[in-house]
Amino acid sequence: MSLGLTVKHRRYVPHAHAHYGGDLVDGAYALGLFGDVATELCIRMAGDEGLFAAYSDVRFVAPVRAGDVLEVTGQVSRVGNRSRTIEFSCAVVCRARPERGASAAEVLDPPIVAVLATGTVVVP
View 1 (tube, rainbow, N blue to C red):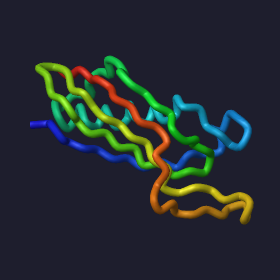
View 2: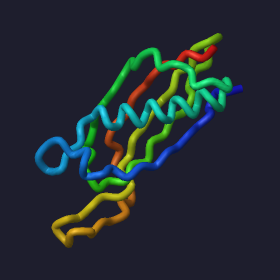
View 3: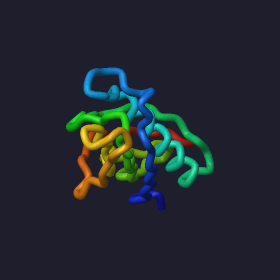
């Protein structure tokens, strides 16, 4: 059964994705990463990429910045006949520290949760 199945991806956020002052990245960046995690979950559950049907909840709780390393997690929380509900989280696990040098960065312990969401995918 797929219930509880979890997938994690990590991604470095390049500076080319900063759109706002303070090297902020738009929230759609995290949503795109959620789509990637959902695709892998669908492949693992059904042998098909599936289709993302909807988000029922999205919360942007902390900023994502260029130079961050993100850990994006999706966990199946409900299994229907063709639909699956997935709980997503996007956490900043490393952050650039340009005030200390052009390439300075640090590991965040604990990570900062930046985005939480619940979404539904449909598989054949």
